Length: 636
Image (cartoon, rainbow, N blue to C red; front, side, top):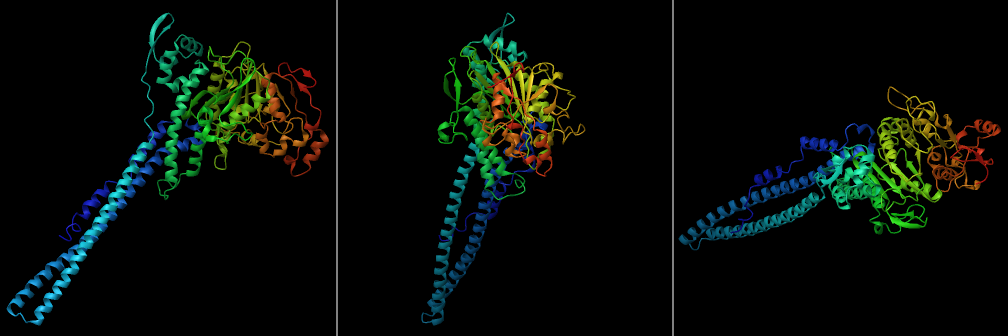
């Protein structure tokens, strides 16, 4: 019967179903934010980078927004469908009423014709009724078809949205890995015990941890690595080889998680803005996630084929690193040794160099080890740049050198919105103990030297670690932001490094460190890193930054990069400064800083562009010293 399909269903029932897909409540949003905040380690939130903190909060909101948008689509579809049903039912009711009326009129007309067969009026009445009935029947058939089309379109749209929901669900992060607290049998202090990784960590002493770990079979170590890779990968005393194996598991799982976060971030960025997301910096969030994925890809070296032709700026193949064997012959390695990885602490530590196949630690033919500690604006995303700087130092150094790149804690962000972060002491207070424990626990071959190199804020972390008892054979500060806010009269105040050689390199026109050092000094606000100028600190020898290309004045000086550019230019490849840093690491002669002569100083001070004019001290014949005994020497 025409109109039966069109008249089926109740619009209010459809609207009621639509209400089930209401937007996520404020309570649910707050619960998700609380979950995000619990992922931030207690006591370190003040020392998390702005981008890391924002990302921790935005990730669950992006997922909420994506699901909410899908809910909105379903609500809109169902409400639109309810409106269509209501219109069709209204029109159907009108035509059904017409049909009933005209049928009655037709019946009356037929009765009149039966009584008066030749009545023209009765005949016209019957024909009119039949014509209206035919029109209504066609209209009802069309309404049936319209309702069928609407139902079919809705079914298709709901099917696609169901698939979209499944896709969203598949992209949601998997539940965090939970250790099963697996145990292995091991003898500790002559007593055989069943222990987990947590039990081993509770030994606390890295030497004891190393001893117990060495007594395990390879199979037992693998059980513990697989059970709790995050703890094994960041536990001092565990060999670098096994930390690398554990951290590769954590990094791979984290990469999968942030790839899912990237999906939601890109999805939300394409949606119309609303009160839930209008404050989010989607571009920055997406850039951070992409940067972290690229960093992990390069550190692991397991996706190099995806970056064919995308070497770093100087042409090294993506994800490939050169290592020297015991004969000092180079060979290629995919990825670096991942010594530490804990994204919740913004921590990533790597090693470029050979490992002993027996002990899993630094190989015995590596006689000198450097550790580069980067400064502000250093993150997991973009960490490849820090690793590249370490590689630059490694290649400028003599053979037999290995390089750690330490980013074991968050560093400040510096941009127009976060300029004060450079002066915050919290980052150093959190990072310095970690650096000291790490370097003091690294197992090195007998006689191998350790030389930490801190750049900018990294030098603050390094100096603070020295105050806490860090051990080193030589120390280099590069464009340092300070030596710590506590009273430091000179490096002689450091308990374990007070009698070792300290060096500093800083461009003559570097204005960046002045902002974060003396310019922000305030004990009340916990800002600034001490009033002792590292360049003039007692016990610190200043080295020459020199030319952008070593021994080539025509390349320009480091100062030629400008007042802010020179702050990072001291780490440029092939520069005098990078060769001086590498010389300290290697224990080779390095060149002293050459002051500008008085005439040049007067000339410089007479103009407004004082800091934009190159100093002339670098043009003087340079004197060489040995970083081991500081004795004067000639030549190189």
